[in-house]
Image 1: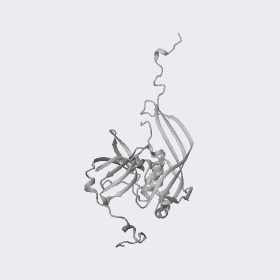
Image 2 (image 1 turned 180 degrees about the vertical axis):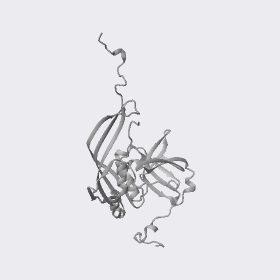
Image 3 (image 1 turned 90 degrees about the horizontal axis):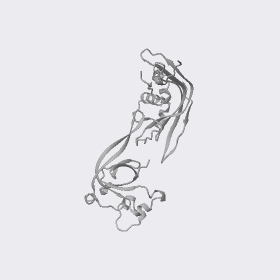
Image 4 (image 1 turned 45 degrees about the vertical axis):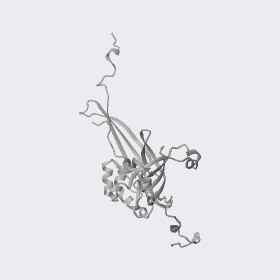
Length: 176
Length: 133
């Protein structure tokens, strides 16, 4: 058994959905804070960012896996994640395509992604606000969609138990 | 408009007011030498920014800023490592572009702070500064 169960980050799951459902090029959707320079081309870009997370259930339990000589400890964590998706452009394309983001996160593909990654995207986004403002010599169209995701993570790792005696024999004190 | 004789300066268009300069390409090539640079380009891979160093071979020269040009810099930035790059017009860079140049035996990143387009005169000029970030 692999020591760590790999998972795809929620921001990337949402980025995949936006890219595929909105038929976008590979350089349009990016995870926020990756020090990206916006390419000098027309059209809109999308950033997916983590606003905050609130774990509400964490536990660890031993599992007996017959294939493993040791006990396998399985840890799970369920949390509410709040993500912000910004769509912005120097032209009007961000304004024209902004509603597509809601459809991308509520369609059949989104439901399939949720089942694949043990998560649930809220049916209705928390907010969708206008953040347009001056950017250099242009007025940028920018709209921020805030969505809530409930997601469960798990990790499995073998842990040493009494099948392996930790104390060297010479240190064992035996009553005579 | 085409100015004939002496006319008031405010009658000249900007196009006419700019005096033509000679093409320096054949002359300046005598000062240039082979330059091997790396231009940092960003691509998005799996929604993450990935930097790729694109090797670029051109002709040019990299020199320190003159004392006068350095004095015009804000006080705090005079000790930064500023350079002037003169190169053939195939070195197409824009401000904020990051390039790698060999310095003291190792590659050092510089960011382009200013660009002068002297393509018609046969060369390009860039002012670069050591990319401390």
